[in-house]
Length: 163
Image 1 (cartoon, rainbow, N blue to C red):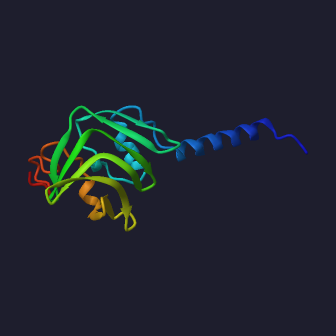
Image 2: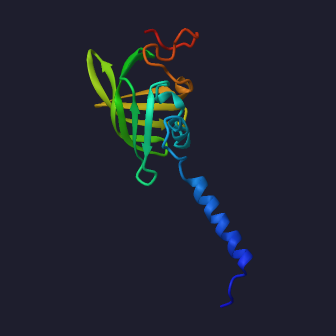
Image 3: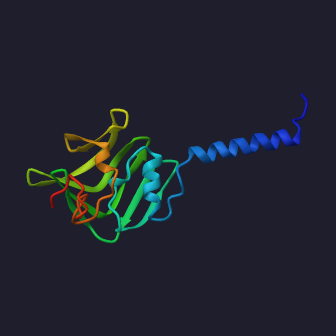
């Protein structure tokens, strides 16, 4: 068997490294990267409120993540009262978040943990699963990033929040 020319070997090595870099999620060591990671996995940015994230860790091999916030967050969005604790954790994969902890919705006066979030209908809707209940909402509802207290309607005329 004949040895590969050094320039061809280098070109193949560069192509392999480039492919590996493009198939891995962006580095997730700083708080601002949470929105890039959500986008990488097929989610809109509005799943995490702005101006409260202080840290974010992601294990790119397992998808295990933790989001740290400086304060708990509450707001009303699309007639649902949402409560987010100072730490959110779970496992993120392509268009799915499983084993979610730290996010709750108030249903009939009870705070219930949202455990799964899935992109469905070819990315047109997001399904939130809390207990045995699942709610589907249009993905475009989450193109904007909510704020604690006022959600998606912070005096900017965005429909959907009435807190």
